[in-house]
Length: 343
Image (tube, rainbow, N blue to C red; front, side, top):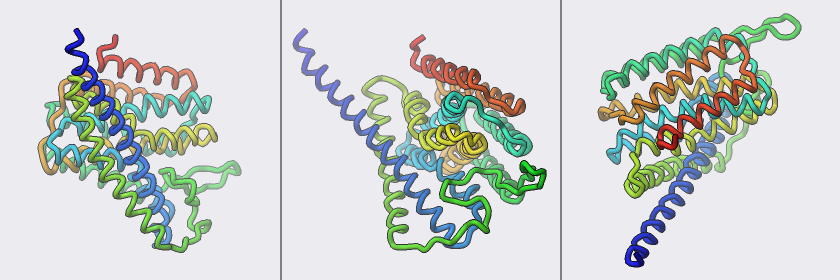
């Protein structure tokens, strides 16, 4: 019995070591994306870009940088099953965990007319396209190209279209259909061009380094843990990695819900989920055919489809109540439990 003790101690130490590496690299990845986003916003404003364009392109894409960075590292290290698992898991976490928790924190989330007219149909369309692509458990070059073209159309339409919303006085107010960060005003007249310093470019550079090295060690730790624990890398990616890379969305949406800003809490999720489904998978798929592991396909894909369906139904009703948010959270717990065969 005691002969196995050194082996057990060594195994435990290795697992703890890679868990620590996973946590540190995940923190570096998320914080790097945050710094990159912050500096990119200031540089964009200083360059004269409108707040609307910054909200759609920089903020909308920036919150999904962790997923994209980890996907490319997984591609280069030859563990392509992590890529669709990460994107699918992030979309599930965004809806069931982020929206669910936001609804519980805010009491209820009110869906605005702009989200119903544009975001819901675009989210539904991108999800249907994604489900069609992964139906054969692999994503080819031409399928990836189709997804990227679809995202290009999505971005172009979002930028061109501006939603007309009536304000409390009955006047028509033009608002961007994407949320922007707290540092960006909603109209060009309110926005003063910030002066740039070497610090802004330094933060940008550090943010890029955080993304690169954080993603590299994150994927390395996932591979090591999957081997030590005899758990598929896709399972870890669809749960732990997806949860970690969804932290930016969680923080933004939860804070917005607490401040009763439902459009920001929900609009953040729409843009992120479309980006995950079409770009996080589409870009790496241009370089190599991506495989979808069996658990991701049999559990992750149906749960993502069902969660998106529930989200769209809630959007059509224009209310996501606290009890719906609690139901979303229960579904997320059930999803994780099924992946690890806990019940």
